Length: 276
Figure 1 (cartoon, one colour):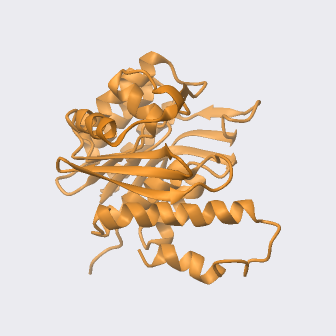
Figure 2 (tube, one colour):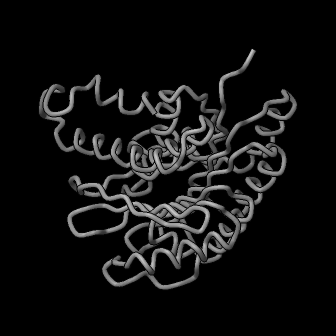
């Protein structure tokens, strides 16, 4: 009997802030895929708060995945997110070597920064170490800040890039290993742009900007992409639908004081995800 598809979810667990595993697990589950977290850290709140408690899980990651191996677990995809140290990247490389089979998809979300700045826990050495994941990756989903870090180039003024510049950047990242590069959260006038580069060809998808920046949208996007991959959904279909779904989520976040039946009905809202 065929088993349910599984994704090994290597990311932090954050108690408050709607990000990381907290948002990824329900989205992957809603797409009828089993999410199997391998925590990199436990945080009370995400690092955008002025104060946060962080329990580094590095020393427990190896025994954790060794037990997975002892139980002969197999995964259809591995999705990496927040990695807090160079040591953790070494552990993730071991996890990939142990669990990535010929048909296992590796999706790398190189969580390093946004809007031209690195997150407080990231150093240039850690960013450089992140590049070691790319030769193993099938898909990588950086925002523009992270794409620049992977390439070792300066963040463009105002975060603005042309379609030709995006194509060159994506091709350069793809040359490091991943066959597909998805650059997210791009500024495009009144829209947010997502750039999909696969098999030497690129195309953009635009969605209206909704409210202010919110944590977790990148986590949600990479989770939907990973689940779509293991379900055999073409990325040319999954990418715009993932972006549309996140737009609906942000709309609800901006309108929490309004009834659920305002705009898109809640049942239809969730149906957008489960129909993927």
